[in-house]
Amino acid sequence: MNARFHFLASIALAAAAVAGTADAQVGEPGRLLASNCFQCHGTNGQGPGFDTIAGKSASEIYQELKDFQAGKEGAGIMAKHSMGYTDAQLQLLAAWLATQR
Amino acid sequence: MDRRRFLGSAVAGVVGSTLLSCGGGGGDDSTVTTTEPPASTAPVIPSPTIKSRVIVIGGGMGGATVAKYLRLWGDAISVTLVERMPTYTSNIMSSLVLTGQRTMSSLSFSYDTLRSKYGIATVFGEVVGIDPVSVKVTLADGTVLTADRIVLAPGISFDDVPGLGTSDKMPHAWQAGPQTALLASQLNAMPSGGVMILTIPKTPYRCPPGPYERACLLADWLKINKPGSKLIVLDANPGIVIEVDNFTNAFTGLYGSVIEYHVNTEVISVDPNAMTLITTAGNFHGEVINLIPRQRAAPLLAVAGLNNATEGRFGRVNVLNYASTVAGAEKVHIIGDASATTQPKAGHIANQEAKVCADAISRILSGGSPDPAPVTNSACYSTITMSQASWLHALFQYDPGTADMKAVAAASGASTGWDVENFEDMETWFNALMGDSFG
Image (cartoon, helix red, strand yellow):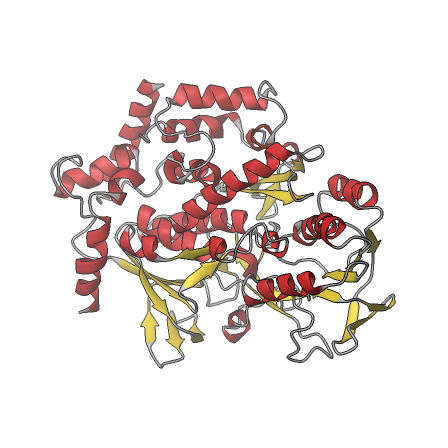
């Protein structure tokens, strides 16, 4: 997953270079998707709130969300929430969240 | 001029702290390398000059969040937040003031962090005019503000109720503030064995589960504090509009001896001196009446000519960027309860609409286009008793076919029943949500 993040990051850098601006913030993959987590887990997943997400790896975050989707973590609000995303979306948002420390 | 002063004072607060932690990933690094040494050792100034300006009108859940995220995510966007009040009073949790479980001050949130941490300029004043074409805002004191974009987050207003006039005998307490405290004092003064009435307006109104959870909470409070009292719930809708299982079970089971529930009962007029409601199902008298009128966007939408949906009540928007769909007003965005979308009117999802809007504006102002597949979510807890709650959730995906946000069925629904743990989680949720919006 780390390799995946570096891959994503290099896409962002390349995109910025192509655009000829320093504005690689725009269009960061996964960021807007991941922001759906912030209401309950704090801005950038850094709390305060329910479990802090920042600091976890992309594979950890992705696997937890898959477990929620599969009903392995009960039938609470997070299980319901996880079922709204496609697999590709989960991968994107997990990759972005893993950049937060 | 203004531009320089803004940079000097406001952006200084952002340097080194916020922008380092906000952008995340490779994006930030590339921003840094063109202008500054590595992020960890030196402050990062996003750009030598402000590239664009956004005015946000309304400092509620949507307005505060969009202002914050425009600064977090935007490429050197200056943000001015225009708001009437120096502090925000949260509607979320405000029914707990009625039962004495929260204070009004615990619902108060300042704009200090938005100013100091994110470099947002605040202007406390009344907007009297908006020119959507030239992107200008006129304040009551004559000040004219110009920008590249305007975001309207003015919230709701209430229909006039015939006969009510300026009487405060039938408060709505649906915009937390003086009316919340007023209704609390009226409830305290109510005799045991008395009758309280709560009216629910036709949809769409702010916070779909809100009136039902308030009814449940107050029924519990009445049972304990005003024995023998009755709570008459007059619903203008044909039935409970959301979380039907939980509220039905609570109304008929837990509160079967307290709540009397009437559907299709719309208030026609009122007589505040007689404490009587004249409705489509006859007259009702109560000692305390919580009259929640039908709702529309704040008057500002009509002033700007943007109230083009729901029979002129709300503003239709493009949900990819929340721009108004009124021709020529594409540079004015409407988020939160004032907009007409398939999403509920509530603070949690207004926060997410704000992020979609901020992301889209930051992309547009940098020459790009909005994310073609935004996702939003709505989540909340409902007080079923004074110590137990349920939860309610929905997740929305953009549907290119209808150009609307569409609820994902598997991700939409409520808890099965209610418990103490959810009530505790409600507190955690509230603190997190307010932190993400104002902190």
